[in-house]
Length: 68
Image 1 (cartoon, rainbow, N blue to C red):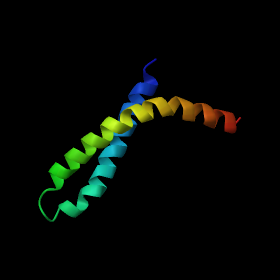
Image 2: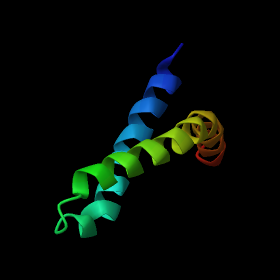
Image 3: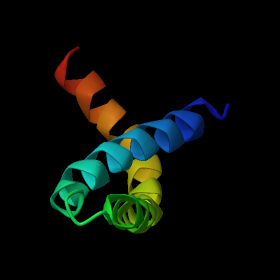
Image 4: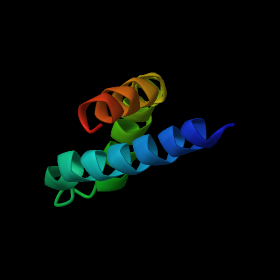
């Protein structure tokens, strides 16, 4: 019942964590990587979580229709 919601939470969290880490790499030399990463992760996850949770069922239906 909550499978798609849990999947969306995990998928968006992992994706945002990796993307924020890559975007924050230039700040590693300055010693402020962690704070930039945390801020970037938090902002992106707040935005992406609802997008993923809403989009995942729609994308699943589209893929099912295409691959039948």
